[in-house]
Image (tube, rainbow, N blue to C red; front, top):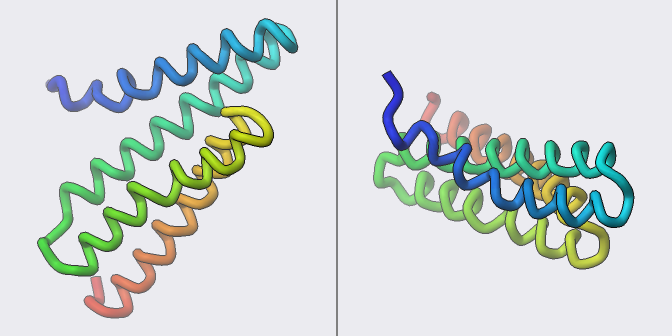
Length: 116
């Protein structure tokens, strides 16, 4: 059975995707708008799911808090920096790349330190 918290990523990822769809559709057409909106929705969805997963397993250690903060700040910062020059879809793609790198780096360090 699903609870309301299962729908939080879907609810939070939908408004930016709809905004990107409307913005790109006016300039480039609805096919490119659908692609851009799907990139934005998927990137936001992955970021929120990852944050939920990290927040659930933070064991109140300093490393868990650092990992959560890096995942909270890194992807949006990359998105803002890239989106200023290009568009939201490119910014979200850059945010997904940065978030993946941060997550893999902190996971590897956590495995090295804690062995799990």
